[in-house]
Image 1 (cartoon, one colour):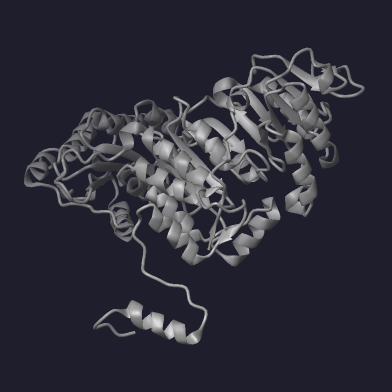
Image 2 (cartoon, rainbow, N blue to C red; image 1 turned 45 degrees about the vertical axis):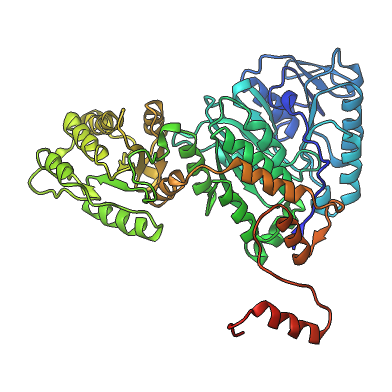
Length: 539
């Protein structure tokens, strides 16, 4: 069955939430362990440049910030109101924020629909009445590009980057903010119960940001199919990569999602089909999700079909200094359906002049550790393989432990520089990867990223990234047609369409579907089966 949504839903304007110039924290306190205390500390840690007010009935100052007794007492409407009080008082605070003309609200408190208090969540939605509201039951939003931390949990300042994360799980977002490996965020948003702002709304807003190269989505519910398809269409138009991890494939996963954010997990196959139709990358776990988003954010990493014959599959070449890694890479690439083409005779001749006698010019290429530290020679090897007409992508394996010291570090530095030199300006798109996630230090990944090369933690994940980067761009027009079907159901929100009604809607948009008919009697079912079977066919 397909869930129907109304076409009349209007996406909220999230500009004042994503780029706030002023903030008020309701429930301001300096008591450690509270959301309000963490928010005020996080705003200071990120160096938020605008005014910040605390709101508390008796305090006049918290963390050096002036406090007012109520939102009505603010000297001016603020862009973002952080509501850090228990659930019972949240609707009244949101009503006050709307009445004061504030731009958006973030609600941390749990105890709404996910806890069975659906009436309280409906009261909250009514109180918002057009005010963009993130949450409840969320950790908030961090806009690194704006220095804004509307965030009630742990946070370390990081440079802004090109990856956005939208997560229904607060803990997934918290953990992602602690990840190194060259992962740099533009925005991280924990959406919680999505009482007002849905993940699709944030996706639609974030893909309009010029600084964003990819968006990672961690979802527990399907949400509004029309809004999601429309946002994915816009992402495709702007060539912004999308990676998705959705829970609920198992009965236990769906039950956990419902208990966590009150989410209803729909048919995983249908949802995955939509993501893949949109050119999105499907992640198997959180690690994959973040690494996929990191790779998708780098424009030079996408495989180009420019040198490939029409209709031929992309070709990947793997370079490493280890025979064992060569074998693992070949086996994993085979399981993922990646093609490792044989190198052309001219390429093999170029390599023979560069490789030690113990090495064989092949794909994967094990250039052996005998070349360790030879920057120019390694660069020439990389460039020779990249110039092969059958190679669209390069995967360069490089493991680097921390704490090498002054004696060993120069060798690793030379290898790293040689790999990047060879990839610079090469006709093949390039990824770097460690074989184990722990062997990709943040400084190393950041150095590659600064040269336009994404560095991925872990060999299997890197090959999954290579597969995602080979996919052709999605067709925005087709996605908008899907959005029109999903949004034109003409039924109340939350209603469900049976299979026949869903197929009729799809057929009306010109999408081919299998023949079928609806019957109510056994004899009619037999007759319909005979008719659908067609001449010369057996059941």
